[in-house]
Image (cartoon, rainbow, N blue to C red):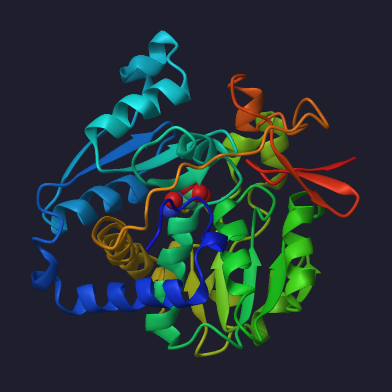
Length: 356
Ligand code: NCD
């Protein structure tokens, strides 16, 4: 089925459909799946804080009959002694059958896949991608709306640093007729590579700075928090926080059929009285996420693709990626690798684009 899940772009629409279908089946009949990963071990390596993602991976594996190991604070592991990512992954892949990892550096899961003997799942790499949140989101949309196409999807908040936003746009741009309404401040717009993907997909998108104006036409509103940990200073963060708040007044501008999603955690971007509105599905979304991860783990362990060693071609055209947060700038042994896109080079770890 899948070797690794680093980016949902590696998953065909058919395979994505199979994951969604299985997640729905498991949700309907969880008893049927409670032994299907008996004897298997999932390692959760969380170099960054998490509640939902880590615990939903753990409960997903437990509900499939498997076991879990891992850390949620790298300072309690050999990372605190200076162990590099390669060595940690080499060791854990000898203990576990599958690894879910979250890391603050962009491209870290891709880097890990170069050294792992078992499948790697990207549970978030810096501000880059978060494919299992997208699985969560599409399972939610499929269950709550009944389709993934011809939707007007509003995304609001930190569209620059929000990895859930990047992964969701990439995936939803493969479905016909979707239109994206991107609401953010000028400083927090989606990165250029995401806009290029949107242009190439043929999906319509527009950028706005006012949430109320966008509300009336939306089928889906995906709210996100301002990603405090990605700002260079508290002062920079404070300039952006509190700009967009969905409250009942703004919600009254939305359609009755609107669905409000949020990957959570929420800070102040949705006021808590919105929680009582039937259009707010973000708490249900977190539960769908567990079923999505159960389906993913089940398929990766029970219908495994032949494990191919991931190899990136060494590339000397430039000697470093100019994204300071790219994993290749933190772990110097990693081979640099770029692909050509027009007159740009794109880093194969973090998708950062540089002029040749
Ligand atoms: C998201 C993340 O970690 O990117 N959280 C999650 O996994 N549900 C969103 C966020 O932290 O804002």
